[in-house]
Amino acid sequence: MARFFMAGTNIEGGMAIIRGRDAEHVRVLRLRPGEDVIICDGEGTDYKCRLVYADKEQAEAEVLEVVRCPAEPTVKVMLLCGLPKGDRVDYIIQKGVEAGADEIRFFNCERCIARPETPEKKLERWQRIAEEAAKQSGRGIIPQVAWAGDFVQALDAAIKKELGLFMYETGEREALNTVLEANKEAKTAAIITGPEGGFAEYEAKLAKSCGLHVCSMGERILRCETAPIVALTATMYATGNLA
Amino acid sequence: MARFFMAGTNIEGGMAIIRGRDAEHVRVLRLRPGEDVIICDGEGTDYKCRLVYADKEQAEAEVLEVVRCPAEPTVKVMLLCGLPKGDRVDYIIQKGVEAGADEIRFFNCERCIARPETPEKKLERWQRIAEEAAKQSGRGIIPQVAWAGDFVQALDAAIKKELGLFMYETGEREALNTVLEANKEAKTAAIITGPEGGFAEYEAKLAKSCGLHVCSMGERILRCETAPIVALTATMYATGNLA
Image 1 (cartoon, rainbow over the protein chains, first blue to last red):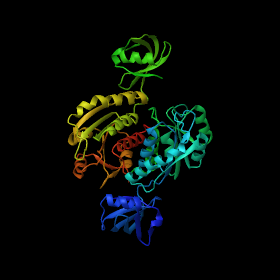
Image 2 (image 1 turned 60 degrees about the horizontal axis):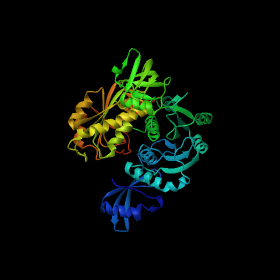
Image 3 (image 1 turned 120 degrees about the vertical axis):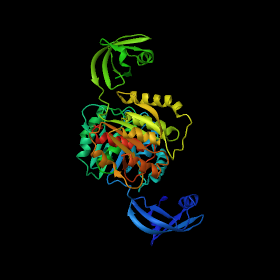
C-alpha cells in the first residue's frame, strides 16, 4: 500500500489533505478515489485512509483507522559513526534506516580520514537518503541524520541512553551478546562505531571510563560501514524487534 | 598481522614456502625476516609463522603455531539469494563474507529481473570479491560463490542443511527469533532470500512443503541485498558467533 509521510497538522476531523510533492506522488502512482493509502505522521502513528478526491494539486483521504506503526522497534537506537569516506556514509544511512535505527549521527575522531570543513552542508543530502529509505522500508518515522561533532560530543550523546555500546576491535572487551542479553528491556540505546582505521586506544579507554560497554562482535573484522548494521541488527534481534 | 591464503601443500616440515602473487604481496608490505605472518590453509586452519627469508620471487616462513582460525563461525551458513540486479550481487558477497557466510549461491526465480544467459561467466569476478572480503575480514576460508540454478535447485540445496530458513514478506510465517532460539545448536544452515520483487506465493508454499521454515523478520521491508545480511547476522547472534 502506498505510504506518505505528513505532518499531523494536515490531518483534521477525520480527513487528510495531501498537497505538494505528495499530491504529485498520488498522481504518479495513478491512485484513484476509493483506493487505500497509509499516511504516517512521522512520529510512529499510521493513519489508514481511503482516497475520496484527487486532482493535480491536492488529494483528500478519509481516515479509516489510526494505529501505531508496526514497523517501529520498541527500542530507539541511535547510531553514532566515526565519519567514513565517500559513499560509505550513504550506505550506513540507507541500511541503518532499513535495519531500524531511530537516529544516525556522524562524528570526527582521531583516525577519521574524511574531514570535511563543513559537514553540516552534507546533511540535506544525507537526510534525503534517510527519507527515501524510511518510505521504502515502511518505517513510521523518518530517522534524523545529524552531525554529532567531535568524539567527546559523540560520547556525550551516547551516555544519555539507557544502554551505550562502543564497538572495538581489540583488547579487553565484553561480548556483545552478553551485554545485550542483560539489557533486553532497554528502551533507548546508542551504538558507537569507528571510521576506516578504527578507534585509538585512548578513545576506547575514554568510552569505558564514561560507562559505555566496550564490546566485541567476534573475530571477524567488519568494515566501518558494515559494523553499525551488524551491531544494530544484533540489538534488534536481542530486543525482540526482528520477528 | 598480514594474512595469506595458501593451499596446505606449501606447508611442509614446519616451513611455509610463499610464491607467486603472495610473495609479491610480502614484498609490497615490506615484510622482513623476523616478522610474523598468518598463513591460512583456506580450510579454517591458521599457521602462525615467522619470516626467515624473502626475495622478489619467494619467501619462506617458519611455522610457530597451528590453530583453528578463531574467525570461523561454529555454524556453516549457506546464503541462497534470488539473483538481484547489478552491484547488489557484489554487495551481498562482500557483506555476506564479512558477516560469516560459509557459501553464497544465487538462483533464478519467478520475479528475478536480472536473467543473465550465462551466469557462470560471472563466477570468476564474484569469487574474487569473496576472496578479497575473506582476507580483509580475517576469515579462515574463502567462501565459495556458486550458481545454484533455478528455484527448485535452490530448495534442494537448502533442505540438505540441518536448518533451512526461507525469508518471506507476507502471510503466515514463523518469527525468525523463535526458529533460531529452537535451533541454536545447528551446525549447518541455509538462508533463502528473494530478488527485488520478492517471492511469488507459490514459491513460498513450495518452500514450506519442503520443510523449510518460512520466516518473518518483522514489519520493516528490507531490500533484497539487505535481507540476507540481516538474517545471517541474526543467525550468527543466535548461535553465539557474534561475541
